[in-house]
Image (cartoon, rainbow, N blue to C red; front, side):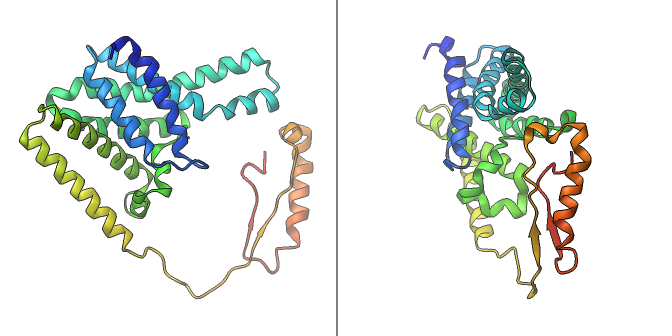
Length: 268
């Protein structure tokens, strides 16, 4: 394939990631999209070009996945369409910098770490995305595995661990492709096989474990929804009325309920 088409293709491949999450739940997609990104990185002539490939992948991934932010900015924020689209483009480009960073670092480390560095740098970049400037961990690929066979690992490794396993499996896919091209050493084949067997074993072990127990007790829980219009929710003059509404709706549950749950950002 002409390398000039890699960025365009990777934008489309990144967009496929959104199909891995609810309501589509195609949990297997990230293994192949990450593998295709890594394959493109191995074909890159320079670290700069590898970063472009990672950036393209991220533009597709986040451009399709966080498009809902435009609704919040334009419909409820009241900004003009041009301003809203500009802010969206800025956000998507910023988020795409993290897979670009992972791709560039992978390219630079191939001589020392082989392709395995991809899993490490992917996890580091995603950790930075979740933490830097308070973080924006939306569409984190670990969440896509909730409906897949890796979900039983979550109590052991957490969401970041699921990301690491997903990235490792993507590396293994690329390594196995290299077997058919006779460009993979016996030691690398042995390492790939060992990692695959370890992941299969860990998945089997965690699947057979029971991570919860019955406490033999019940709790009374109330859900309170004030149903405040988004268009007026954030207006300063509505702060006190909103609080009073939630307090009035909740008071009747104080005596007989153990827990009262309000919506996210019920209090402005």
